Image (tube, rainbow over all chains, first blue to last red; front, top):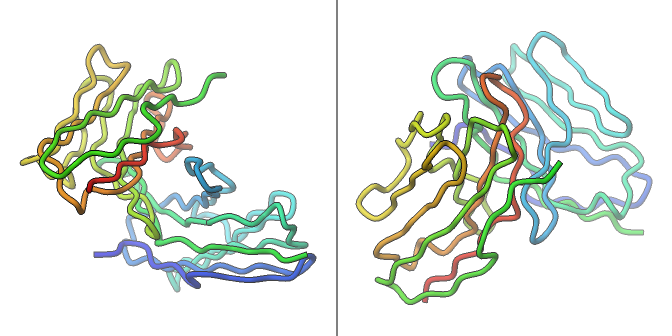
Length: 113
Length: 115
């Protein structure tokens, strides 16, 4: 059972454009929603994270939008750059029980010059 | 601050052989995770340790996988015997003690190919 569903599977964006990746979850016990960035041959690295008490969080060119009622959250990358080309994973975890992360299936982003 | 160290980086074995992976977490991090990442998929938790105790191993195929974390620091993950479907990247991650829902720091992973 996929706890976190992610789309699209792949995304191609022109340099300077906006990249948008969407995720949805079912478990209402989740209360921490990070996004991880992974380059080939590397482990995932935390990019930005949000908790459900806010609807949006922005860090530089990266913004998470969170819709608690719809159980959806998304990552927006403004002014996308070729260096942003990587695989992005959304994830979720909850305070009850083991606080392990449930990952989405990943989005391979390619930013073309 | 040194990151999460894993070895080896790559391993190729034949099916039915055994293999072991090693992880050294960030100093002071009490929580250690092993994740399996199959090509084209997101990481899936295999086992979570808090110090040297197991918190969650519900997704660990215990008939062939085992893991230990002696003295609450380094950890090893073993597969015996390996199957073709075990081909994946095995990621180790750690996070600080006693803090829920905080950043998990990942190592570079061990890429296992079973032939």
